[in-house]
Length: 347
Ligand code: KG4
Ligand code: ZN
View 1 (tube, helix red, strand yellow):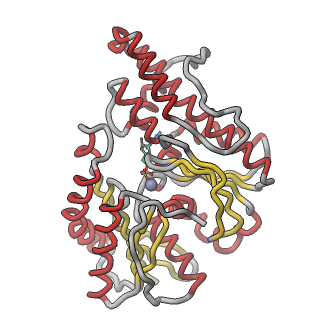
View 2 (cartoon, rainbow, N blue to C red):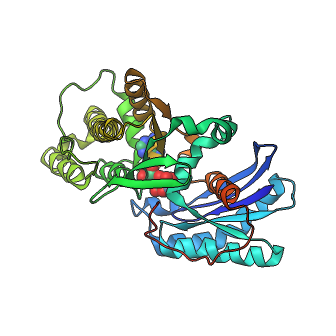
View 3 (tube, rainbow, N blue to C red):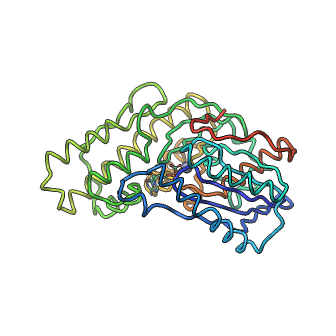
């Protein structure tokens, strides 16, 4: 089967073509057109601009994906329907509908959060996920990106319950906003990680709060962390020119976010007697976060999965894989009614 997948929920225009034969996955193409430069001057995503760019980019990205995949015969179309920015979601959906009509194909609607989890199945884990994954459930999934921070219990493939989420900003949003305060580039996550890495010795002094870390729930809050950075930087504004100051603050921002994410995920893992921790979303590309999670999971003898870094951030390969699992379950190519849902919940 050959699946053409489309992702436009945020600021990346993505098309991927996947071939799945004999339970083996081959990525024929995975094209991403990033709008990062365009949104950088706003320090975040401008939805109107993003929609216009998706409309402009989609035909070009599709053409590139088809030619890289050597114009294969497509069997199924997959598209993200939510959560995300509604105008952006509709652009992808309308494009998918037109394509499906032209090619006389069905469309599978995909949840973006579920797809971030399924990004773990790229590569050798694909076969593994089909044949052998049952023994890893229940699993606790932590999805952290620019728009989302959720802890989800996954009872099996396709069965989820959200047990905690952010009450204000997402973890990635916190990276992006605090990076802006420090005068670093957008997206903030990679910029802060790079500055933190330059620090020669670990920062032993805790200078920022770890919001909600000791609260006995699985929720998060990151806007207070951003405010704390703002006040501390304002009171030491002359230091903004010092490289050491930027490095120390970057280290602390990164570590504060990691501390809270790990603490809450481990608590959920113990409370729900989960056998596995699964990460997903742009923030999980963070090297320190992966390293510290892996070490903690190892000590507790809990299985640990994180997607290949390239598939942590938004891409259409994860959309195609999720659609394939949905198709396996339903075995129908009949089209469903498809519409965008900016606040779609995983369930
Ligand atoms: O999943 P994603 O590409 O888009 C959304 O669905 O939001 O995630 C983008 C987010 C941005 O906030 C970006 O700063 C963050 O992921 N990010 C990182 C890293 N790479 C991307 N955060 C921390 N460390 C990174 N290395
Ligand atoms: Zn995402």
